[in-house]
Amino acid sequence: MPEVTITIGGRDFAVACQEGEEHYLQTAAQALDTEASVIAAQGRLPEARMLLMAGLMLADKTAGVEEQLKATTSRVNALESEVSQLRAAPAGQPEKIEVAVIPETVTDALADIATRTEALASAIKEKATG
Image (cartoon, rainbow, N blue to C red; front, top):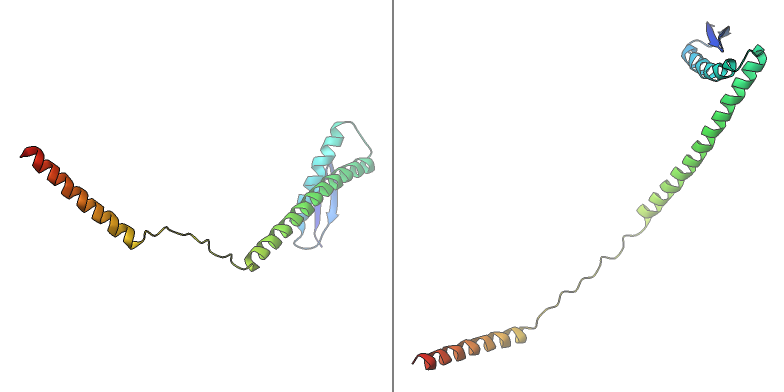
């Protein structure tokens, strides 16, 4: 079992860990040292009190992160449920769009009127010129 020396609050500690977990121990010790350094900067405290306070500060931060994780997980679950419901819902009916159709009799009547109007215009033109 490897033994790792970690520094917390300016003090060295020899700690044993499982093989391959040295990196995790160093990371955890670094987080604890960050909190302990804040406490140590405020004055000399007994080692046990410094470690207790640093541990409590880390626990407080961890509790906050766990609350955020819980809220985020809940939100993700709700969104996943909504997506599942939307995917499972039957497709809506396509929107019906009606386009006005002009009856053929109306177009024929308009064409006839246009032809007669052109004929009248030609007749008026002939009488005016001639």
